[in-house]
Amino acid sequence: MKLITGLLALIALSSFTVDAMASNDDYPGVHILQYHHVSDSTPAVTSITPEQFEQHLRYLKDNNFNVVDIEQAATWVDEGASIPAKTVVITFDDGYDNVFENAHPILTEYDYPYAVFVNPDLLEAHPSAYMSWQELKTIDAEGATIVNHGQTHAHLIRRKDNESEAQWQARMKQDVVSAQQAIDAQLGEQPKYFAYPYGEYSPALEKLLKDWGFKGFAQHSGAWSQWSPTTAIPRFPASGRYANLETLAVKLNSLPMPVTHYTPADPLVSHSETRPTVTVELSKTEGMNTNALRCFAGSDVLEPHWDSEMQFSVTPKNDIPMGRSRINCTAPSTSGGYHWFSVALIRPDSQGNWPD
Image (tube, rainbow, N blue to C red; front, side, top):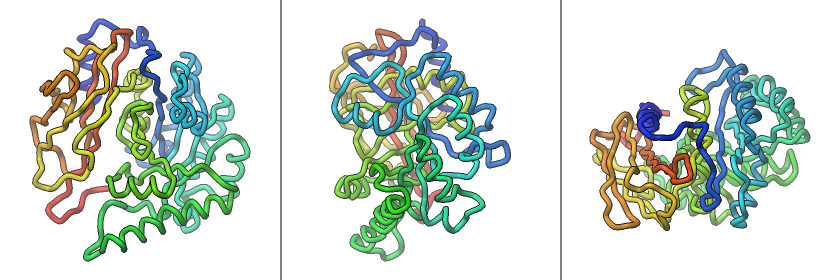
């Protein structure tokens, strides 16, 4: 995707700069950063070097961002509290050993809390790649929050051949609930936060998480706010091609978009849905320049069709790719910055599969 290229092109045409961005008390939000590897010898697509990571933290400090632990952020959002301006949560998926070796010392130096979503089965089966329970206990004692990424890191929404609904639900319970039990057994009771492997979720999986008392964290972008579903909380990827500080600054200074409903609610579309229409309903438009609202599908800029004063629709100009993609929508704020909303999409191949 060339989503950020398109977004930066739009920003270049507007009258504000990153330095002029400001928070808006009417649109409180938390910016969650998502990392995987912190290393210069791991796959580039999911990695950030220790030097780049330190640059990210230095940017947060130099620009007076408020880095808080994930539980504090959840409390503010759940209670509808006033969220301090420029609030950030740092998260890592998978619990790789290089987070302990390379990221933890830098985070300790900056005195920044963070969360690590782990896969208990995988860390025990592959001790050379993942943090050990002892290392997780160490960072837990020093301010990290250890949370749930499932047992297997599988494509949970992908059904097995001839798998019944009851069988799928039992498999989900084993993957999610037993992972929480393993984490709690090792570290004491931890918050019931679950990060979807690959960021893949569905209404059926969301319902199970809600029934089991979990919050769900995904990988589509945007600020976590009162408008975020508790089982589809957005995060901003900050590794690989998303590690660039220029584009990261735009995201960190973005504002939530007050979306009350959108379709498709299920990211998994059919193979034949090559250009799915996204429809978004807003709760308010005050403070947003809706005339300048634009959406991005890959490198394409999409102008919305306003179905009503509070609802717009966009349709991709070209076929969406096989696998995971996103349509991101932004609208300038009258107080500076951009309101940002993202819709996750997954298009399978003709056999119902898609790449990791």
